[in-house]
Image (cartoon, rainbow, N blue to C red):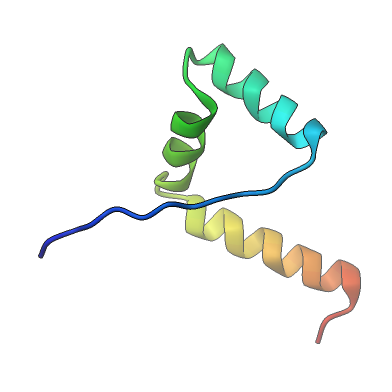
Length: 62
């Protein structure tokens, strides 16, 4: 199976970007590398699903 590359563009507020920069700097990484590393973590899917469910409960989405 051949895998290509894609570009993901994100728009975020300054506060979130600052937090990401801090987390990345503590690990000696760029923000881009830190985000990619976070996305490929084994537990990302579970953590993401939990965040979605919590957000839905907060906003009352059935």
